[in-house]
Length: 240
Image (cartoon, rainbow, N blue to C red; front, side, top):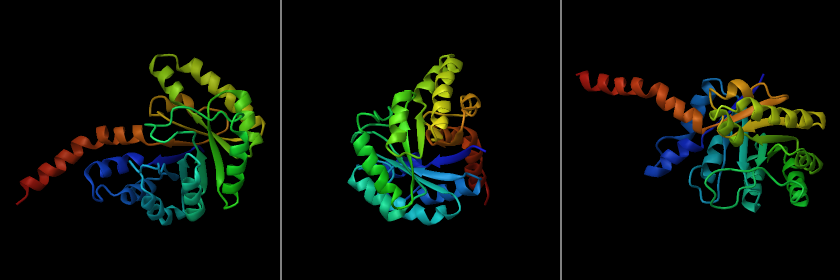
C-alpha cells in the first residue's frame, strides 16, 4: 500500500496571510488523519512564511498513530527541530533561504560529506532520513553512500511533462531510477505537483512507499467543497 502524507503548509499560508490562528493547522491536520491520511508533512522554513516552529510542536502529539514527516534544509535550526520533536521521518531538501518552493534535488556527490554527517545526526534521534533527489543514478548512489534510508523523488518535471502529454516517457525515466534505488537498498517516496490525474501513472513507480501532497490537495478541496460551503452559508442566513 502506498501511503499518503498530507502536507499542511498551504493551510498555514492561508492563516498567515490574515494573521491570527484561523484556519487552524492542527485542526486541518486532525481532519486529514480522521479522513484516513497515513501521515502529516510540514516544512518549517526559516522565514516561517507558512509553517511556524510552534506548529511543529503543536502537531507532534496528533501524529502518534500516523507518520510525522518534517521537510527542510538541514541547517542547525532544522536539526534542532528534529531533535526536539523526534519525527518519524526527516526529509532533507537542498532549498536555499528564500526560495519559493523546492525545485531541485540534491547534488549528493558534491555534498556527500555534509549529508553523511547530517544523516548520522538525525538518525541518532530515531528519525528515518529521506533525501530529495532527481533521477540521476550516480547521485542516487551518492545518497545511499551518505547513509540515506529513502529518497524522495522531485516529481515537478514529471508533472510538467504529464501536463504536456509526455507523461509516459517521463515516468519511464523515474521508473528506471526507482528500480535502481530499490536495488541498492533505498526506500522510495515521491512529491511535488502530484495530483489526482498524474498519480494514476506515478503510483506504479517501483518500490513507491509514500507520496507527500499539499498544494493539489488543497486546490481540489476548494473545487470539490466550494459549492457545499456556500450552501451552508445560505442555509444559516435563511434559518431564523
